[in-house]
Length: 569
Image (cartoon, rainbow, N blue to C red; front, side, top):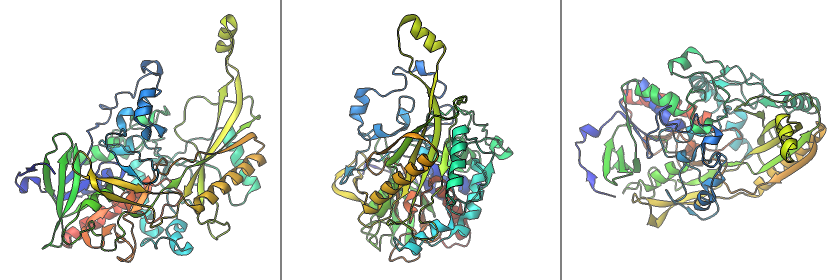
C-alpha cells in the first residue's frame, strides 16, 4: 500500500459505504440515501456524468475515423476485450483495456469490465427477466450447489419496486417459469417474428416466443420524468450512453437520484484495497482505498458496508480483506470464498433464411429482440443434462449486394432490392456451480495499486456440452417446422466470461458451513458487510441477471437500515 492519508476519522466516517456504482451499487446508493443515511460511494474508475460524458452519443457513422470499427492495432493490443460485441470505436472509452488491470487465466476466461461511474450499466444489453420459483428451488430439487435461502415470494415485491423505478417494457405473457412484472408497453415484434411465434405455439405446448422484456422507457411514467428521463428513441446506440435516459443506467437514474438527496458522497478513482475488520468489535469498521492516480491510501469508516464491485472484483476484495480473525478472506470460515463461480453459456447460435413476407421489411431500429423462455427440465427432469437454456430470437431483412460499375451501380444503389429475411437465435444456458470453478489471489504478483492479481480457474463441463447439443437440435427442429431454409448451426467455443454474466464465489445459503451469505445478503460471520452483486448468486438460472441484482440490493438495504435502527449492526 502507499502512504496512508491520516485525515481525521470523523471527516471520513459515514452512515454507509457502497463499493461500486454499477447496476447494484447504484441501487444501494439510491436506497440508502433515500432513507436518510449519509452514504459514501466508492468507484475505482473515472466520473461519467449523464449526457455530459457521452462523447460519441450523437456522432454519425462518417464522423468516426474508422467508421466505428476497431483498428488492427487496437485488436492486437486487446485480444480479450476486443471479443466483446460492444467494444467498438463508439464505446472504447467505457471498457477496461487488457493492460489496464491484468489477471491470470489458469483456464481461458474473458473478463469484461467497465471502470467508471455507472460501471457496465452504460453498456449492458438491458434484458430484464424475473426469476421464478423454479429457479430458486432448482438447486434443492436437482441436487447441486446448495439450497437458496429465499424463494420467489421473498423477492417478488422487490422486483416490483425496482421495475417501477427503472422502467421495464414487456408483455404480461402468463408464463410460469418467467413471471410477469410491472411493465410499460411492450416493443413490437416484426412480421416474421410474429409468424415464428405462432408456428412455435401451434407445434409445441411447452414453448413460447415473446418480445424481450427490456429496461427501455416505451411510455415514461411520472417517476421517470422526475428522474429527467425521456422516451426511448429506438436509436439502438445504447453502448454510447443515452442522452435521453431512454434506457435504465446508474448514470441516468439511481446515481443522480441519490445525489439530489444531499446524502451521497461520490469518490472516483478510488480502488478498494480491502475491508477493515476490528477484532475487538467483531465487525467491519471501514475500507482501505488506494487512489488510482496518486496511489495514496485512505481509510473510510461506516457501520454498514455494501460490496458491489461486480462479481469477480467483489471476490477479489473479500479475499484480500485478511486479518487474524479471517486469514483467508473476510467471512471465509467455510473456505468457500471464491469457489462455485458460474456463468451463462452463450456458445451456440442457429441462423436461417425465410422466403415469406416478401412484401414486408423493417424500418428503423429496435433496441430489443424476441425471447424464448426456458422450456427444458422446467417441472421435471426430461433430458440427460441438468437445468436448461433460454434463447434470443430475431428476424431482419437486408438488401441484396449492389454489385457493378458506373451507371449500373448507381441504379442499384438508388433502387435497393431487399434480400430474403434472415433469422437468428443464440442460447443462454444455465451452468452448474462447481467448487472447481473458482477465483483466487496470486501469492506474488500484484497490480499497480499493490493488490494481488486475481486468478480465474473456470471452465465448461459435460453438462454444458450436452446443453449446447440439445439447443442446436431443438432450434434446428423449430426452424424447420417454421419453414425456414438454409439452417446453419454454430458453436463459437468462446471462453467463459464473454457472456458477461459471471456469478458466485460469495454465495447465499442457509448454512454458514456451506455458504458465505445469509438470506439478507449478509456475511454469516461479519453481519455488517453485505454482498448484492453477481458474487452473491447461489445458482445462475437462464435469465439475464441484472434485474435480480437490483431487487436483492433494494431488499438488503431495507433490512440493513432496519437492523441499524435496532442497533444490531
